Image 1 (cartoon, rainbow over the protein chains, first blue to last red):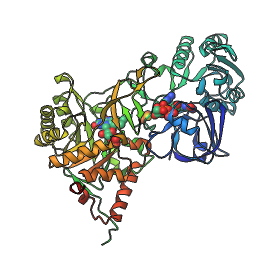
Image 2: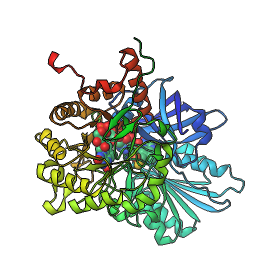
Image 3: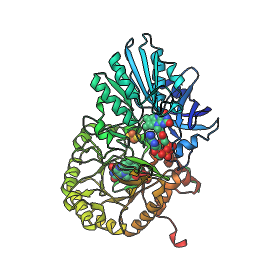
Image 4: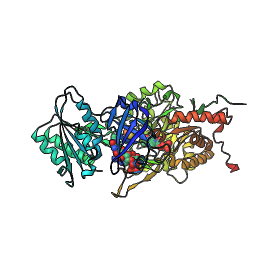
Length: 265
Length: 309
Ligand SMILES: Cc1cc2nc3c(=O)[nH]c(=O)nc-3n(C[C@H](O)[C@H](O)[C@H](O)COP(=O)(O)OP(=O)(O)OC[C@H]3O[C@@H](n4cnc5c(N)ncnc54)[C@H](O)[C@@H]3O)c2cc1C
Ligand SMILES: Cc1cc2nc3c(=O)[nH]c(=O)nc-3n(C[C@H](O)[C@H](O)[C@H](O)COP(=O)(O)O)c2cc1C
Ligand code: FES
């Protein structure tokens, strides 16, 4: 059953307002695939009411540990920030499809925006363990140096790493797309994998489409159930209609998403 | 006398339910989504997501937003249409051996009648008529806010099917008892209430509505007192069995609706929070009956002593 209790073992504020939680949760640690998420209940009251989705940053089947990175943005994440070690969370997961690993040996580019780095750390970790390791180039963008959360964990798992900040406080100045476009031209990878805000994903999808490189994005949307029942997490599909982030995703082939209709919000 | 094994079964519109607890339409998909989390064969009934004649795409994102002790939704009746529902979704629902109630929605009286006809097949045990949707023939006015429209719609659906017809009332009205009586007079076999309360919330930083559809339906614990009051009023106005819903999170909440006058209780938003919520409600009702020496849950329907308040 995709459901478990997770005990908070360690909470570290990696940068202001960003917490790396290490959870004791053997069931999820065993089953988790990169790109999947957990749907966490915060407390047992009615406010906050709904569960909150968080990507899995790393899962260690040997130790039973699962890590998630939580950025405090509102009521639920604000409460998590106050939790002490030993707190028990009721969670559903691992949920969603996750990224399909490449066959091996190819050239891939990972693009992370802000907190979107979390699932890509897990994905990069998996690539490193493959028999025929792909060559992994990664681009990590954020507003400023501080927002390049867990960049060392990310960089350590990649062959090449480029940081980009909007204010130039670290790495290149600009947006990830300013680096991605020339990178694809310099040396065309077989696949691009991306996670970050919608606007970034739309731009990455466009660049990849123009360059003819398959791109797989992990998306976010407000959720109700997290298990495919309520149709609350819908995003517009290029085939018409909508797909569910929780059950059909969160990872999609970027061509499956209708980025024009997505942009309206 | 000590009750060790209370009788939780109830009769609603000719349906025999092993207990009063069922899913609320739209919150439980087509049942199978929740199979990993609870044993569906233990439920009183399964109520499906709304089915329409033609496939519906649904509303633009975002479609849900949490509010204090509740949530707003504007899903927009996304569903694959009646034909696909019958071929692909209905067969899987038979496996659980509990009554299947299909929630239907339409844009015109004719559409509802056609749907009722199509769904009058083996495997469907009752129809729940969602009258909280706009009637395109009456300038988009919601069926369920008008006695005449509610009456005509109920009559047409009853004429088109031999299945029990449950009319699901909208709370977005001045006097729900008037609409309830119109549905009763037109031949409804049972009523369910309440559907979601129309609401809205705004992202003040971006000065934008949170929902892509601007407005949405409020559900969850926040609406429960409204549900209890409306069930209480309707139970006194009609002679039909009622299915109550609105903010039920646990057995105590379900009992509140039962004491107000509901024979059956549907659980909606709580499924998102706790996928096994319906089991907990069923177990909790049984425990309550043992604790209070109640032999039959049916004896508690409408049993609130309002005159002693
Ligand atoms: C598949 C997926 C993976 C995610 N992974 C991470 C992660 O690894 N780290 C992280 O910090 N955040 C992640 N998020 C976003 C995270 O779920 C929200 O930031 C969080 O739910 C906000 O809750 P809150 O109560 O603090 O905010 P509030 O604004 O108070 O929440 C109100 C409601 O809005 C929802 N909500 C608000 N922002 C978002 C958002 N960006 N995405 C989805 N729902 C939102 C909440 O779930 C809640 O229902 C992920 C979201 C999804 C869909
Ligand atoms: C996401 C969502 C979708 C819903 N879809 C439908 C629907 O298709 N048809 C319908 O009659 N009611 C629908 N409802 C209303 C519920 O069935 C129920 O009447 C309402 O949510 C109150 O119960 P609750 O507070 O337990 O959720 C929906 C509610 C939610 C939250
Ligand atoms: S959150 Fe309910 S379908 Fe995705």
